Amino acid sequence: MDKRIEKLQGRLIVSCQALPEEPLHSSFIMGKMAVAALEGGAAGIRANTKEDILEIKNNVNIPIIGIVKRDYEDSMVYITPTMKEIDELMEVGPEIIALDATSSIRPGNLKLTNFYHQIRRKYPNQLLMADCSTVEEAVYADELGFDFIGTTLVGYTQQSKGDKIEEDDFAILRKILNKVSNKVIAEGNINTPEKAKRVKELGVFSLVVGSAITRPQLITKAFAEKLDY
Image (tube, rainbow, N blue to C red; front, side, top):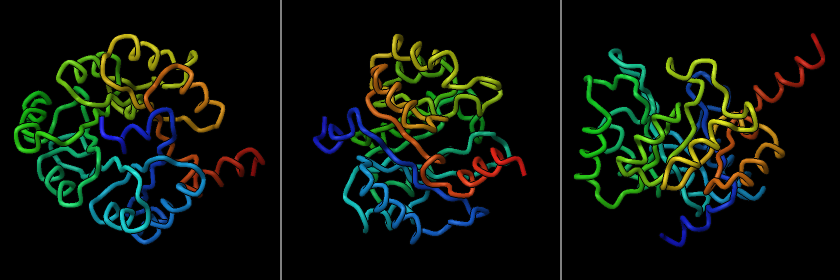
């Protein structure tokens, strides 16, 4: 395993993302957010779009998980859904590319198996992370050969509706860890340091925290709601 990727083991990856409708949407701001994350102890960054990734690379020298979020009319899949997004990411060279690896219908009705093998043929040395929403999807992605298995989409798909990764002491995550052979990256609603510590104890390779660190509007909302106004 690459020494840069080894440095992610047991450590925190911070997701630095802001969509166009969010107040911090800006490659410049995401670059500075990555600097702040690094200063706080982050070992890696997860980022959206080649523009943000390029800016982040200009500011920090730590591994990046790259994605492109894009909507297609014929599919609910929006995380790196087609080869177009893969090609865009390869222009800026993130260490890992993450993509939706759920059972949801892909754009053009392309099956995950076919898409995975297309990527491997075109970019055989690129590390790939499977963003999954169920235990079954994680097992399938593992069998396909994804380098990393992620819990990113638990609760965000029709097939995982109502599920929460942190429920019952991270039961879904524990099942995945017991059933897959490749490295697991925990992601999704790990919104306290205590949860992060517990996830590490369960034996994941690494973990991603996003909104609880990098979306101040959501952090503020949580405080305001507690004050009941």
